[in-house]
Every structure is written in structure tokens, then in C-alpha cells.
Image (cartoon, rainbow, N blue to C red):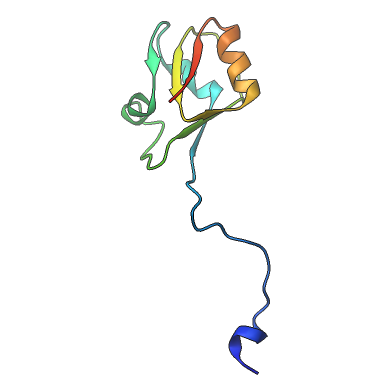
Length: 92
């Protein structure tokens, strides 16, 4: 029996997927009020070590600082928390 038929076949792996780096809203407290936070600022602050395809902001944590956040994607809860704090969520 050939090896390709003996090995179990399960799942699907998309070879064209571009994995995004995930950052929680609670981590954005480090920045000052009124700052613009993007991919470059997250790397300079040491939150991300590298970012090849983009950043997705997740809604875990609380935010009480007014920020303008620029990212590739946002979850609905993250967008609501940023806007509730008086900031803006911009998709780039």
C-alpha cells in the first residue's frame, strides 16, 4: 500500500492564509491619551516583536485612555471599548 494512502487525511490547511498578530485592548493602556497607535508604535513599545501581515485588536481587557487605533482588523467588542473610551478605531 503506498504511503500516501496509509497516512490519515484530516482537516484543511490554507496555504494562502495571512496570519494576523493579536493584541488585546487591555494592553493599549500603556499609551498616553490622544496618541495614535499603529503597527509601528506597538513594535516600538515592545508589545509585538514583529508583524509580517498585520494586527488584529481583540476585546479582552478594559481601556480608559482616548486613543486612535489603526489596525488591520478589530473585533466588535474591541471597537466598542475603544469608542466608549472616546477614541477611534480605524481599519488600514
